[in-house]
Image (cartoon, rainbow, N blue to C red; front, side, top):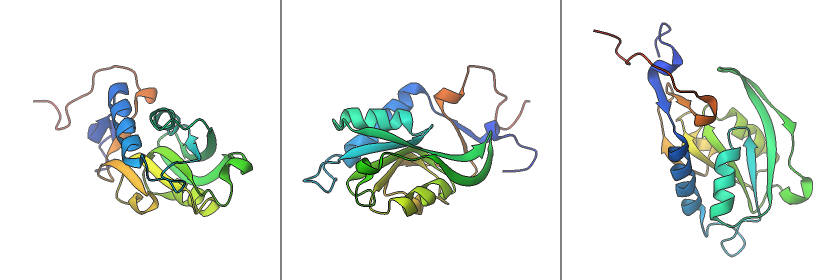
Length: 169
């Protein structure tokens, strides 16, 4: 993306309806793929972005055990070194995460998922959206977007006017 272009000028705006449909599609793709006769033992959301998709996936797949892992890797729109600031319960993660679905909204560069994957290498990693740099860190995803696209999630947005991508006449 050119330096004089703001992130919203090549933005992918996701509505609540769209994230709901896409998270349901993710659940359907994961249905019956768990190691316990097709079942998953738990869902772990990567906070904060993974919480809404994880809730929808857990509901669709009737998974009652839900926890979170908090990883901080952004300050506003700038990526920083990923670090865990809250881990899920050890008994939920069991033997390196086997049978656990780790859910996030997006894999961007893959640094967050790489950190969590190193902690729980046997978990299954699922995101709703994936960018090319991080795609290798995800086992299952729904939609791929280009690396230079900024995804605007509904929990980060308010309605306002935006200039057209190519500018004004």
